[in-house]
Length: 359
Image (cartoon, rainbow, N blue to C red; front, top):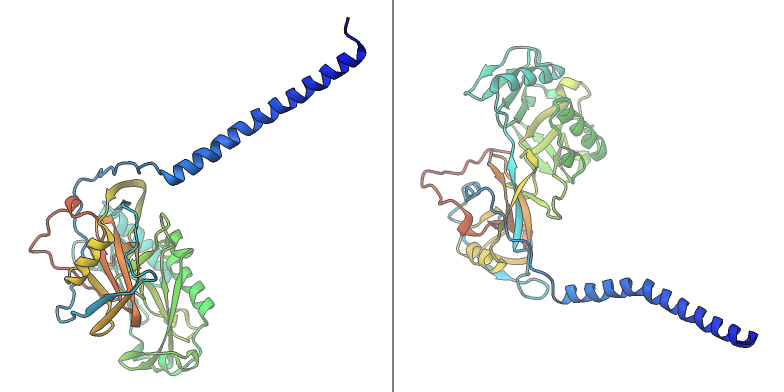
């Protein structure tokens, strides 16, 4: 018969082994996850195969490039090399309004809040122009693609361009958002995105850029979309957006905004496909051969410092939102090259001519 000492001894050993077993049971999943994480970091699994669900995509329509601008280009990134970027990216469908008449009725209701009470004139089968009954202002609306262009002829009213009490940056941003919200067209990614401010002095019939708020007769607010899929957005204008408003210093609501534009690719959410991309080397070679679009020229010698992927926000309708390679350089040089693998693009039509609407 076991003594009390022996029972105590074996009980303590059993407890120790039980504790050790519990620790092993608890730590084993943690250790396994750590080992698995290290292995996957060293040997990452291949990304899912691109879905290419939309078949061959139409080629991006960039504005017509200047054939006279052919700079000598040099790559000087931090490590002197082109970066290794994603090999696959999402492509999104752009929504359009299919019912012209129903949308026109909705637009009429929206623009009444801005004082456009008269029936619009028809510019073409999808574009209508509203004329303000009391002030020299017009509003053109494309009811299919949901684009808006507002203009007030400020040159006819000296009180507008003789004063310099334009709103400050924050106030102008709030008023710009309010203007587009009144029309019911402000996307959430614009409301939460980046903004850019520019000042202008009046030299009728033109606005001349100025760097000082105290010398400005007008202030322009550009609204840019917030990032999507961890990629920024770039625009035709480079440092300008196709969604903007220009304000005077006049407190009269009907004369406060002298110009506004809204061209926005309305994405069909949860409707996307994935497509293979070119390499950065391919895009760089195409840019050097003059096949890209230069948003901001910089002179005969260009030093490119940064290369990355972004989504291109067009100010003319395109059926899909597609990624581009962005090349940034000294003296504000900025250029884009379509990022989709050419094997998944439709052949360019000889009759295609890029449109270049003003911003």
